[in-house]
Image: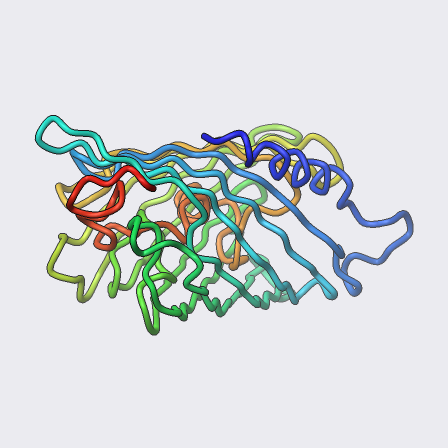
Length: 293
């Protein structure tokens, strides 16, 4: 990737390391203040297309139940067709989000979350890096802890308008459903497993997908966490595989739904990109094979 993104990576990592609440702050009522994270990832979207991404996550949490966020992403997409390799690099579309979450008292510690995202068309449609239109997306989820080390959550997300609110790992115009389970293995260590799939209508360029996600996270301090996530496609319409490595105090992007879900963390790494059905034939600057991108 281009060297211009290195200062951004260092800045986000510094913010992440310093974003813990001040001593004596009541995080339950006052929130955590500034949160930050950064993730790097690679994915094989189709047999001919691969994608690499650096995703920054900046969030402000004035209250424990309320979060505002912005998720800029730098993307490098490559198409290999007919012996030719075309590549586009640049910033993708920009998601802005507001999210609410609430944990209820009682058996199994139920929690609920919802988020609304607006994705601005900042990516270059000429290079296949953006949708060219504003997108709106909704994310809903709920979870329970039936026994102490185990947490189970269910989530649903859908783009309400446009295509840019969808991740490159999900089909545009489809509803993405997921079931996730995370287990605390030891102090500071968590392992996660998720099953995710697209349901409903998808556009004519692709089939709906089913995916298996797996991940692990390790706490380095009061809030700083390192995550490693991967996924494997279970159907022919699925992305072949995806991997990401993250560090920081925020990883859920525009949504707090299923924060320990590996597939959801992966989706946020590749948010704002070309999308599985978007930008086809434009990677590298268009069908003429221009290398201006």
